[in-house]
Length: 145
Image (tube, rainbow, N blue to C red; front, side):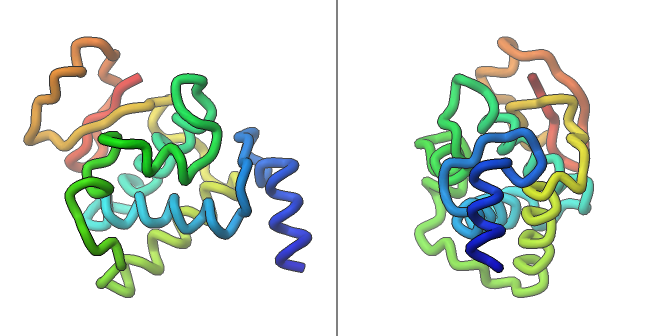
């Protein structure tokens, strides 16, 4: 059944409308890693927001059309180039990140970022913010599109 479900997700993008080009499990793992490293200290709403920014990039022509390539694209998510050991250490936070990733991929949660493709922590001021519309703040992250 897992193989059938994985194949169905490749064809139907797990009900979300996003085109997924790799195996469901691999994409879920990449999305969960991004949620874990970018937002594990945030509320569930904040974790879903990070998940949706990732997925919004997948559906945007400016980025690759699969989750793993979007997550690991150079200098897009800070943890991918600043942390050497990506292994999740906090088991509870990792379990939550996996459930958030699964619910996002399965289309069970709507986008709470209004199609944002960027965000940053409130304590930094990146150079690129003038190029985007500020949408909202969720937890410590400010979201843009």
